Image (cartoon, rainbow, N blue to C red):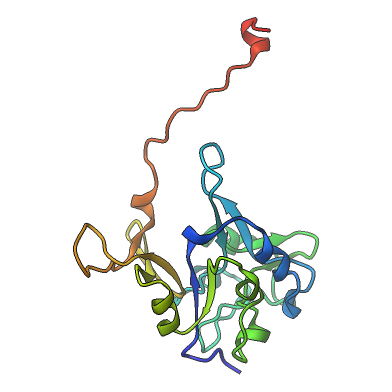
Length: 215
């Protein structure tokens, strides 16, 4: 069964509290029981405790599938990009290197690429993915557009991401500010990931007493 068209998966990074509930719940999904497919990443460990959940964005034109020489990664008609198929995956790591969101991970013990499949056994029958079902801050939300807009009136979903000259559209949507540049009602059309990167990160130095004679 396909994922119901009126239900969407939303990520709101600003709401993540780093509790790891999603990571633990993901191991309970029947399609990959015992292995978590969600990554909880630290935004800038040296300067902040802010974390962000990283799940597959389920691209409309998935780069991971395009670079797979064994045709092991399939995108279903409802837009969900499945994890690699064991009989076909040759553990070449092409998908791991190609994904702009850094989602696929090679499980060397299985010689298999494994990634988030939106808990397809659940979402395809209208149930929430495991991670969204336990997130206490609703940084991970599975529901209708009307529900998310009512719950987050100051935010708007974004499903277009710019990486240099490449624009990627996704099934999973990320919540961002409803207006940009101070314009009333002016919604962001896309998120420019490349422009958001800091071209001049602050210099960081560590002074070790054993090297400069300090005690």
